[in-house]
Length: 339
Image (cartoon, rainbow, N blue to C red; front, side, top):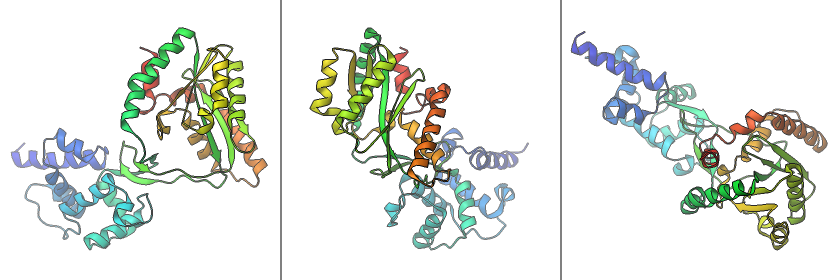
């Protein structure tokens, strides 16, 4: 094979790695040791003329509508920020928003289908985003992961205690799940303050795959939270360690007095503020809400019946619950416990 053929083959292999194997652009550039600008030039050539445009010396084909600089600009815009950075009043990348952004800021008009192909050529795909708060403190997270939880796990081991991760959720029948475009294999993160729902529920999960849940009538408070703690401890039949967020009723004098009175039968620990992704019990509600959203809900009673069925289904699927502890943000639990 001549050098010319080798260079053409390399171009095709690099582009295939991105648009067919869906590997991240910057990773491919590093693996093949080519400048990122060169890689976007090859993507631009492929977009305008297909595989033949990647052959050595090929300069024919229709005029490129998007240059390498244009494609890199779109890639950076989508992967390094969100539409709010470009004066759009929406935080998720949709085809129409990307289309309007390109027309507004690059002066290039594309059809919706053309934008979809463009994003795919850039190694991007529509995905469910993870929502994180702007108020998250990295230092507190590091302390929790490296000191607080390891010490807690050791204490639980010494006491023979079961560790429960507990979370409360409000669910609405009209809730929906959105998609946004992002890097394949890398879930997008959208910073947001949260949403509102209607039916209140509390649940707890353990690393071994146990799950308990209860519906909450009215507003959640210390008395109702304490009632759930009693239920957890009674079901466990041994000491329990409960990891929760920083809701007021978790820190209330009434709750703390109750925990103290248990003399070690119930211990509490707190996640870093604004860090729900560290709690595997969050996944219970992600699954439940996604399944509930697909059902025709005509009343609150019907919603409660459907949600009960969904939660019991999750409760019986130990492997699913265990998988909640194997995610990128929750794998620290098993890693610490199994040391």
